[in-house]
Image 1 (cartoon, rainbow over the protein chains, first blue to last red):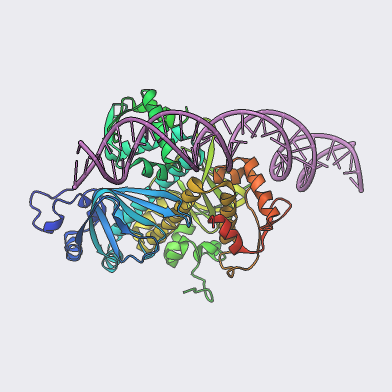
Image 2 (image 1 turned 45 degrees about the horizontal axis):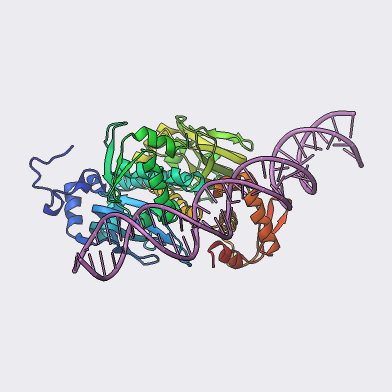
Length: 240
Length: 240
DNA sequence: CGATTAATTGAGCGGACTCAAAGCTAGTGG
DNA sequence: CCACTAGCTTTGAGTCCGCTCAATTAATCG
């Protein structure tokens, strides 16, 4: 239940924040939210900004307020794989562990609301609802990771690209009506798409033009995509 | 703290169960354990037995008592990808959702301890410790899924097979000393390995012989593997 | 507008796949 | 105990998809 008509109990910094509605902060009561808000700092990152480096001990968690964050893994010889994409108002960070072999990087402009690890860890202990909210997000991420493993392991290049476009469309416009046309901006470069899909830039590009020539998508300025018939693209993505 | 000297409070069926120590049941107090144990049933599955089918509404959760469980995804045209491997005493099931597009299948003989969904869901609400334990397992699975995405997306065939062997070795013998030789039985067929790694049976087989000829492994009866030098195999797996 | 980066397109190569056949294992029954 | 079968695994030959290397075109930004 949103109590926004008289929300004087809600900390000022949190009032307009989406994380209170669709993110983890929704699991906190006004007192807890106030306690947390006293330790939050807003951070802004430019495109390609590194939010946390691989192997770094991060003593911060964050909510994503705006933008898209890439989670990437790197091999010694430079091969790279994006293993997670996070959108506002997702929670960011690995609960119960400070270290991680992941790099978090801004894809476009990103705004975070960060808070110290120990503050949230304490709140988690006090609030089962908060742990539940974090648990739900972990499970969503796990479901997504597994879908993606199917894509990485078994799909062809064109199926991968089609799957990716549908994934982005679903994330950027969660409540779109079925089967209607969708238009959106890809928040990733071709290089990022390649790292996401386990392909090369060139192959991604070739499949994009292939999809365009099949009239399954239209492309404006390399970024703006329209999918005239989502179901038809989904058939390609699923190899039907 | 293990209270096993006088454990008359522990239900009989749970006394010898590893899930109480390394699994989720460790988060339950004796009363809760008793309540749960009244609804548990033991189930046995033969090799290739289907524990839950894709799309099926499962009203059961389980602990794996013995054996290895494959979680697989299937495409309309039959392409298959293993997206998770679970070992005793893992918890099995998707909390807070009855449906799932996953199939769970026994790899070799499997013994489960199953219990109704609503019983555990109620226990979760009463016990933050239980939710925490489940959350921790979800996070471990997510970490593993992401490692694996790197493998699927960016590694060559021989690197994939090497990575797989190291993964299995780590799971079957979690406390082995570093760098010593390891011997174990692969709990999967070549076909399963292929579905795990996004390869074909033939390619898996070729890479196995290649690793054997490089003296990185020895193979007995197609199943029993010895890794004489784990670090050297790890270098192959990481492309060094 | 020029400079720089991102994306596309082309030609040729190679690693993993496909199709095919032979070798092993384990299990069965004579 | 051994022949026989069925399934799994290995090996071989040839093909193709996606990669590499290279050049061109398009977008972005001062």
